[in-house]
Image (cartoon, rainbow, N blue to C red; front, side, top):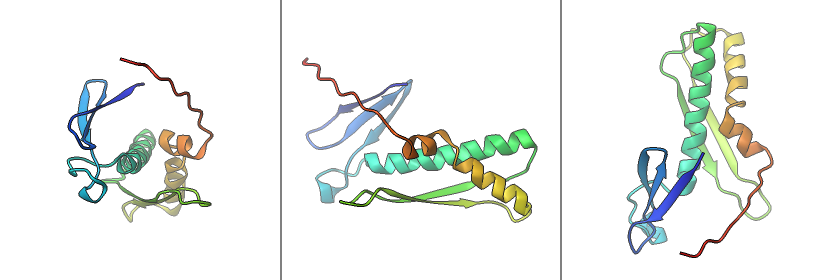
Length: 131
């Protein structure tokens, strides 16, 4: 899996390409950007929200449970000195689901690949290429 970011202007606007998809990232004017796209941290929260929703929906589909229109909201607070990044995940499900179904779906949300990646140990390898 590969994502590539290329600067488009003299500010912070970047085009990100993933497979055949393209979208913009930027910073708000308060940070010197033009607000032409979400910030990288907003994309991280979006990745967690969408992964949680998709994972929940895939599980429910396999079980034959009608979950209707699932909504997952992620509010985040970036890491501050001495405190970790905080993600608050709110899952909105229909009332007709049993308590057992609700509990199981919340367990599944915590197992989505993005959630597991964020709570696990990550390794980074940086490489410089001069062009």
